[in-house]
Length: 486
Image (cartoon, rainbow, N blue to C red; front, top):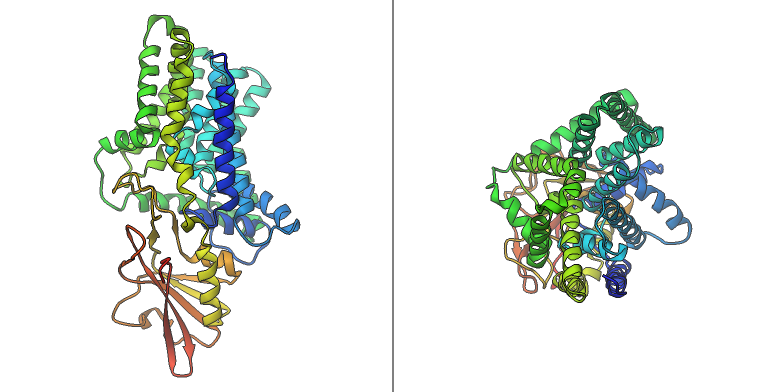
């Protein structure tokens, strides 16, 4: 593919995502929990719980200089930093693809890895999914480039395996399987054991230091962290089992039809006898990806973003197809890459919707704080998701919620301590059984409505947020809406 078009395509793609990172003022899913943890690592009195230590530490490294430079309280610095991190992960995937012998331009390989709906939609948000794919890609690159027998090879593998486990524990299944396959093939069991032990030690030390930074001892912090991981796995599995074919459906949607067909073409090319050498290099990544798929099939609540660790292998298959097309026709590979880019163009384009820069999270947090005048807040139940106005690809695309307004979001924009109270708000009135009915002056409570409220502007529904304060006549209540129309 001797053309500059891949570099042009990549520049256009990154420019569109950089514009979105600079202008988008909302956060996605769990982002505020990571942001609050980052501030706790820097000494903030706000502490939710330690979640995703690796990503939170990275965000803390961004937060300190951003605030020192006058960046202020907002999301722009974090979004730019997340885009840079995920672009580095895409580069690692491209380097791995070329290292194992797929002859495509570096820019084309980076573009292929980024041309899926998961990367396009999540790359700028403080989410762990695309960094998980990047950490897997980095491990695969090091595995292909540095021998396990060398000290550098063992040290780099241990560091990246620990990074995978710190960021998204289940993503470590892929590099773990790669390590086992390599040990069995090369009879390097001793070296593999050293890598695994060193990775476990690095993981434990990192978690211990993180807990010490937020004021929790190692003896208390590490067991709490393990319990939290178990709790999240149980929470994910608490919502009834979904059919196994959902994995294939979500992967089809995430890669787009064009990307899926390109990956299937690459898989067919890999099956040819001439590709025997490349197939042998992919035994570990293929085994790890299969193991990860088995894990996903055992998860009851399946979300398409859980598929992100599979992106490196999918991108390799797509690049194999591009390589084959380039040999067949000079123009075929650039055309296929252009079609792939066009198939994901709606994702960056959707960020042009005014909804993404309405700054509603900040406004709502400040409005509630001003009305309640409280120093401490109690939170009840879960928050309601809010859909964007346009560019909804499919009515049951459950992984395209835009954000959750919840306790971490409120705390991020107000710097006020909060206490999460179990249970849901009851339509019968103020939840006195939880003990907040007798709260003293200076305290308030926030809760989502028990049911969704239709909106005039959005295609879905969004919950109303209720705030409560202690007034002269007892507890006063006021509803605050996230709706763009009031």
